[in-house]
Image (cartoon, rainbow, N blue to C red; front, side, top):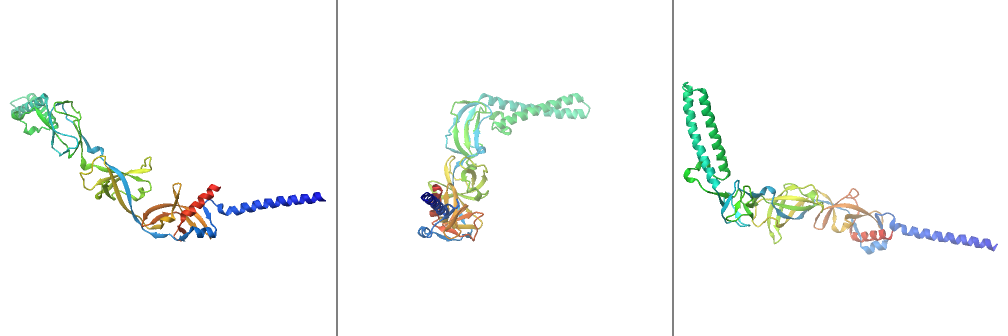
Length: 379
């Protein structure tokens, strides 16, 4: 009989232990009922100072700050060359100097320039004589006083001299010589190399006495009137930027002196930093801006009406933004949101789960985030 009593007591004890373990597990369960739900006791909610409220529908405006540099587009970098080789006899250019279009950059000379001018004047004179002969033969041929064959030969000769003259004329024009003003008394051994643009001298590859080969780069000029500003805009800011948008540009040491510019292009391809290139053009060039110089920009933006909450209502964890919605007493659901413009302590949010009627935590939401993170670590 005692043996039966001991067995019953043992079973009762085991059942009681199992029940306690189940009850203990059940008591812990509310804190981790769902991965995105945080539950507090009444005392915890009171101590945390949590306040709730509904999001407001507002249209916010703000400013996006961009950093970038002064960039020279490829078409604005000019390499000055000369079609024929020769010796540099004069130049006073230095890197950093400003030059005007048509300004003499250097004087170059060579014997072949004399020969080219001589050949042109000779061809011009031969063409004049052949044209006179052509007119004479034309009259004779009309009167049947000369054969057609002779007239054809004179015509071909005139055309040959004309082609030679025009060809040499184009070569002289390429060298900067005006053929219409060239005479035997104006033949020169020296030619001038002039600037094709208004710009800044960035490189000088010659010196007096140096022989330069045909098409060798003599100077590198930058057409400063065509410089652009290249900025990096992060992925979250790209939706607020558009072509033609006004931009205020300023240097680090001249933040109060702002220049006006416009967005020209937006590169839709993101780089390794998840940023896109924004190309801007100045309304008016400022000589204070130098190629390669770092610049800043402010872009004023506005957005359509959307839900806004105090900045304190939005928490961030692992690169994502969250708000907490008050569901039932002391129970809060963690909802991911996309944030927008921030202005005067208010922040735009958007989410399919949040509406104007949602009851959100607007104060001390960070304490709920800490509670949620601690619950995850305990699991």
